[in-house]
Image (tube, rainbow, N blue to C red; front, side, top):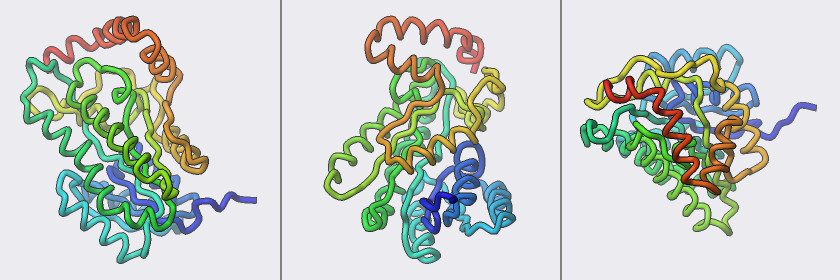
Length: 274
């Protein structure tokens, strides 16, 4: 018998025009959920919407820049107008960077915080009353960089640590309200985020310094997220390398620092010349 856990649940996904967000949208639609997809690119959103409609899925696409509080508020209001409730919010919208801190312009880090942290905060602020009403799930797509250091990505790591602290605290605040909070820590994932990563001047680098074919796919990440929501897990760390590094950093941080430094030195040319 088919699992009907997500049947008719309303799922809001930010950053749904590509990568993990797009993969989640398609997978949730296959599970019978009503999907609300949001991103800055209207054209890419429409492609995702068409794919879901081709599966006879229920979908609403909303063009939204999550760094704008008003646009986040509008996203939630449009969801309620269309479907009348919110069961699950997946805060996935995000952007990365590659540059040494001494070289990077400070407004680049501010932009990362505006999208990665404040975008999550704004969407959560307006969606939370509806999620609480349904005893639903609040998800933050964080990163291994929210657990361990990641050289060349100070702003990205800071934004993910901020996300983690916010969501963990929110979980405790609503401990008695049946709120499920899940924090997802992908390792290196084959998605668009590295190609749109900002350089020291805030411009997209348009290239990846790593072998994309050796990474976990966005579709596999989406399957892990859906499984974790169904089981109402607190946090998940993805990829074998990610799990080992998270474990090592917790128990032997100095050794972990050395190993992370050696691994990321392979990107030295990309980082220093970004």
